Length: 267
Image (tube, rainbow, N blue to C red):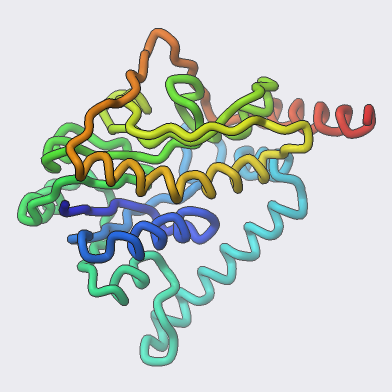
């Protein structure tokens, strides 16, 4: 089975997730593309500063600072590699792929026509998407089996962004990871594999994200195995049962933080 990976340059969680796939399926991966955009990419009408402040409230000062430091170190290492490629390794997921002999692309958008022409030459069975791009029919029609995505929630509930936050905000008792087919409608494709876990009283946004990605490593491999074996006993992603999450506002984040403080004081 020929696999192509479409991703973003994110050192916080995505890099280790994609590396896990590369190591597990290195002989099947025919290419990897890194698209522009990162976890701070939001709709143009939204304020990036407001989103960053919201993340600070949601994550807490320690975890926000830790993530910022990791990102800064990552960007510094990229800069050092760009200036001194003989002295430093490329720290990006693109660099990891190239060290495994995988052909790579750096692209502006996954829907670019020239990039799609390159993909058509690769005889792709499955594309794994972890980019911030909204994928259109031109790309979705290229792989023989389809495009798949990891989503940090139990679809059809909690479609959309920053789902671990909304799980806690809405006091839900269960969450997990869904590996699903990608369609033009947001998070609406049928679910190949779904892993669940209970939300504990002590859970925070950061612990939920950590548990999600731990499950995602096994879930994505299980999904690829099912597709390779031709299994199609997927879970219907019923739009009638769907809920949708937008980017949290500063007010949403402040409400969440106040409620977390109240819960702590009530212990």
